[in-house]
Image 1 (tube, rainbow, N blue to C red):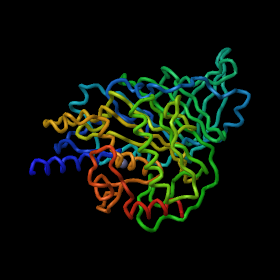
Image 2 (image 1 turned 45 degrees about the horizontal axis):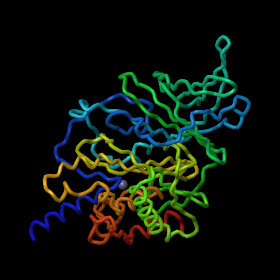
Image 3 (image 1 turned 180 degrees about the vertical axis):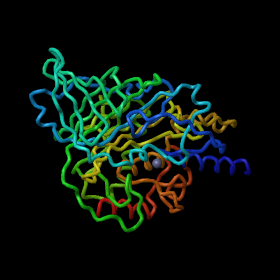
Image 4 (image 1 turned 45 degrees about the vertical axis):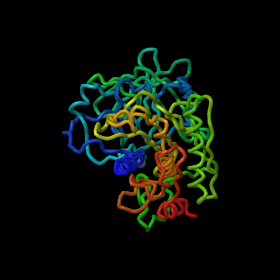
Length: 408
Ligand SMILES: [Zn+2]
C-alpha cells in the first residue's frame, strides 16, 4: 500500500508537466552567458534544430514580387523565434535563467512599433532590397532573382548573418502578415533555425484590461487572443496512433475550453500535409521525435506552445504546440512502473488541455489558485491521471479567466 501511495505521488508530479517544466534536480546550475543572436526568444535543442521541420511541407519560393512590393510597405516585426543547437558538451556546464516556464516569456517585449519598409539599391547589375525600419536595429537584405525577392542575409545591430538556406515563405491569407523561415550559423558556428513574422500595423485597439488578476499571455492588462471567427488547431503529425490519440484529446480539450466562449468557432482537424511552424495560415500541433529541448537540463519540457502575437491589435496571429518526445527520457526512472510506462501514455490529457489553454491565450497561474494553468493541476482532473483516458475539467479560475479573456 505504501509503495502504491508513493507511486501515485510521483505520478502526480508527472502530470504537472505542462508546456510544463518538471524539475529533475534541485541543484542550481551556473549561468552560461552568450551574446544575443537575432534578439528575442531562443529555444535550445540538442543536435540539429532542423529536426523541428521534419515531416513538414516547405515552400521556399518567395511571394515577394518586385512589382508588388507596394503591398508590403509599412509592416511591423511581430515575432522572432529561434531554435538553436546545443552540443552535448555544452550541456554539462551551460544553462540559464531560473524562472522561464516555457516559450512565451522572452517574446514578452513589445517589438511591433517599428515600421519596416523596402528600399531598393543596386550593385553592379544586381538589384537588392533592404527591409528595414529607421528605429530598429534589425535589417533584412534580399536579392532580386527573376522578379522575386529572395532573402539573403539578416543584420542585427552590428552583426550580419548570411542565410544558409531559406526553408519557408508564408503569406497570411488576408495579405496582412508574412513570415520567413531560414537557418544560418552565428559567430560561434551555432546552427540557428529562425522564424521572423511581420504584420501590417493598425490603430491601437483599446481594450478594457482585466481587473481580476487573470494571467493572460504576454500582458495581463491586455487581452491578446484569437480574433478570427473560425480558428483551426491542426494535428500536424504523421498518420499514426499518436496522431489519433492527440487528435482525440485535443478535440475534447478544445471543446472543454471553448464551450465557455461560444461566440467564436474553434475546431480541431487532422492535416495530411502541413507546413512548418512559421507558417501563419496553419496553427499546428506537432511532434518532434527523438529530440530534446535543453534550455534547462534539470527540467523536462515535454510540450510547449509558441504564440506569435500582434500586440497593437491585441490578437494572436499564429500559435503552434509542440510535443518533445525525447524530453521523457530525462526521467531516468529506476523502478519497473516507470520503465514499463509507454511514452505515449505520458501524453496526458491534462497536459494537452493545459497547452490548449496557452493556445487560447492564457498564461500560467502559479499563485496556488486551482487551475489547469498551474503545474499543480491535480484539482482539475480525475484521479487516474496517468491513464490516457483521464479526464481534465476546468477549475473555476479557468472558466472565469477564459470568459473574461473572450469577454463573454
Ligand atoms: Zn504551460
